[in-house]
Length: 200
Image (cartoon, rainbow, N blue to C red; front, side, top):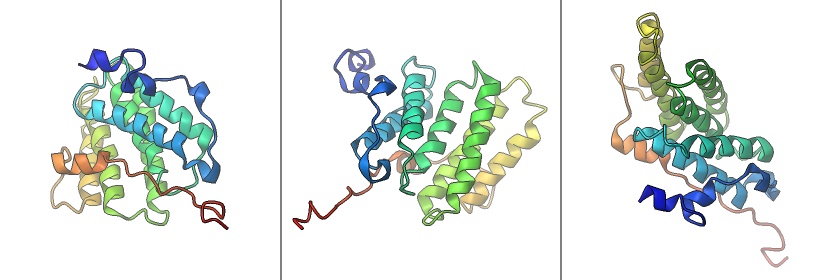
């Protein structure tokens, strides 16, 4: 079934397209192009979440989403978390093959997550889930690395950080299925409405 979805012209294959198609949208990059980028990211995140991050189409999807974000430079705070969530998913996807690069991606994701959390609306429940997800995924990377014993303190710190963000009483190792579904849900921002759309 998956191979059929990757065939030419099928939905998943259409997401794995060249970044050359990216074009800047009006209204701060919050139009259809950004929605496609967010769907790319969500598809890659979902693959990572179910343990399929090594699939050959996952990395291109996440890289394409990052390149979209770089070009579009969205100003809407509602879509800014797509960046750090994509970075973290890519870190998980390449963790075994490129652990040093993966750790760099996670550190960037954590930095962006902390920065976006301070923006208006950054204290919401979904933002907490996203930040916790970054911390837990980073902990998983360290726990499964060649230096797992040496990084045990860091691993425990990231799990505790996730619990603190979610206001849990004890360190946690993963999000619940319900939390994961809510975290992966993409809610497109409302379209930009100008005078012409209002008939003015």
